[in-house]
Length: 421
Image (cartoon, rainbow, N blue to C red):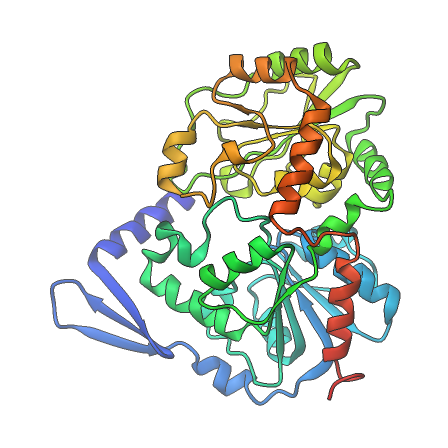
């Protein structure tokens, strides 16, 4: 069924083109003068525009309804600890299935649904970690009394994003909505002076930007990782292992790299260098499921943790991390634990996606094949690595100190009806 739909959509794109002009979508048959205009915000103006705003309502979304995680999770917990009178709503893909992830005080609605549109239309505060292009494309408009706080899902900007990424801005209609999303945003939450400069350029002159740190990274401070470790071990049904988390990112062209990471050799290398018995956790990117990073059932020393809702808990629990270009490793750097880069397609990816700085400028040992990965693990120098990590964070102007959630929660409370000016 999905394959059939994709074929129909592909065929339609060859015949029909559309552009966005203000609040209208203009469809035309290619190579003909035939045009049709659709006012795509009409439903909002008719049904949602006049609904009153509830200033104590806060709507959260983690990367298009993926569940209870990232910055929103930790801000929600701070809000619940500080003020029980807030109406906290999360949009998720499967409310019934995902209910178990959330505190009982949080209401859930289905991502992208009419109910979600109503929640956004009546909420005093929007909190997200990605561009809300999907909702804007459905006709959602932000009212002047509403406050939109953007807590981006990346960190330290290794991969080029938004206005800096030609792969994204080549889609004119997406760019129109992304610019609108940026213009709607009232506060941008950054974790460093480096990221602040990236935001200003990549999000079309973003302002104001608050260097609060990323709330999701509070878990790496104050010994909070111990609870995360217990949660991960309970999920796995195993304990007394050292944990390696492999967390590759997606490819814009969805191509798989030639030499897959050899989990058996990786396990052997880790045990020779760091001792102990290692379990390899594989977290696939949602857009790359079933690709080159998938594991086989007979590999008992591997576990697929793609279904685990909060990657920050996986990072906090891990004794080491391997990735390619995922920003997760730039969160994990705060732990000071070993992290490695496995990037067989480094040259091609750098040309396709673009990086703000080279991998060689990071503290992480780099391997482009399995032999190099084994070699990098064998000669890993923990003292040298930690010093490089310290200098890296210092050069990037890191603001991470474990208090980001409290700062963002305080900002939200100031913007609610209770403290609203």
